[in-house]
Image 1: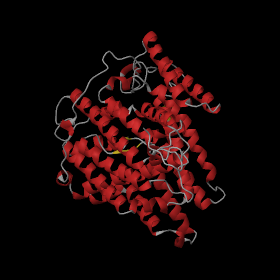
Image 2: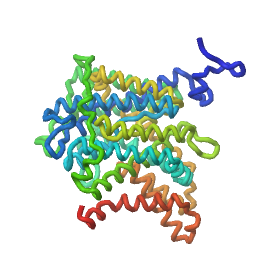
Image 3: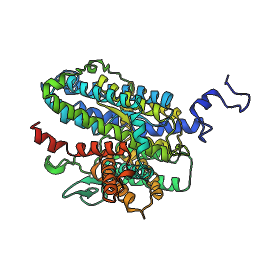
Length: 491
């Protein structure tokens, strides 16, 4: 029987998660959690293809073995496990509708920037150190203070930039935008060719119409309908996976599906024990590559994780209208604490640093406003450990329209930026454009911070720059200058 208060009649569950207060209900939260999971379930497939296929200095795959198939299965299981546990933790403690999973970019740095020069346990040890440092910064209040030190207009530009960034991710995932020479190409050889592209266009148009008509569950309806069409097309047309690697002869099947071929799997239930990955050597990397090189690696991980999360949380909170009257994110401290622990958990479990996912915006776009949505998403990630084959049914081309539409919704935050004031408009502009152009939230934030401080100095208004902004700008100058520093010190 539901516990209620005599004054309001609202259950303790409702009060704790602020469900009624935030204008939501249980059905909306469950739906939003499902949408977020479906939109980012690809990480259970993609992270193993990045981390699980890389070798360390001894030629071993994660888990210490020589079998790439086993390594991929281990990383997939660990990816789902950590994502599930940490996303549920975010829901319960952070009470915010954001999912946690292995960070893209961070996993690439781990696989290709660290592992080849040390053992996997040593590489995971650096991730644990980075997460521990971020946690200390949260517990001391420094990370929250940094959030408050950022000017409001730059916060809005972060949200708008993330909107463009995730829209670009959606277009790339769908194959509409592809890496090319000199910069990018449109679809397949400049044409919207192939059934997968048709699937994306159909899904995008359906979602545009439903969202414009303000239909409830517009994103989930479109996503499910498009997935059904994708499965039917694959079963009847036998399209297969794409191969657009220029190094391979003939560019075989350039109009095929992206990462996931949408077919009903023969096997649904299966479980892999990820415990062989749970190995880490905290300080081993400092002996393997030297103190300076290891320190720079930790700094790069730290800065990227630190500001990616601040940018993500800012953008999501603004989009969900979860900012207080003075512009603060509700429950910011717990949210950042969970994210910091997630970074450590990724290192401990051998999946790479885990962090808040901007794809959570798809669930927010479908109505999610509370941590209940995260409970749903996290539970589905844990379920994915046992029914991993089912996570492969939804192709990129069916999920990508949600990212494009949510990108639009987040881009609308640009209206809050005073573009008549160049001192803030130019840093905001750089923040917005560099996120999609460099495929990095951190790069965009860094360019905005550094240019903001530089303009204030040039205007003779250095007194308007807070102490923390000086520190942030200096940290980003070092971040952008890591390569020259390595050359200078011979690292």
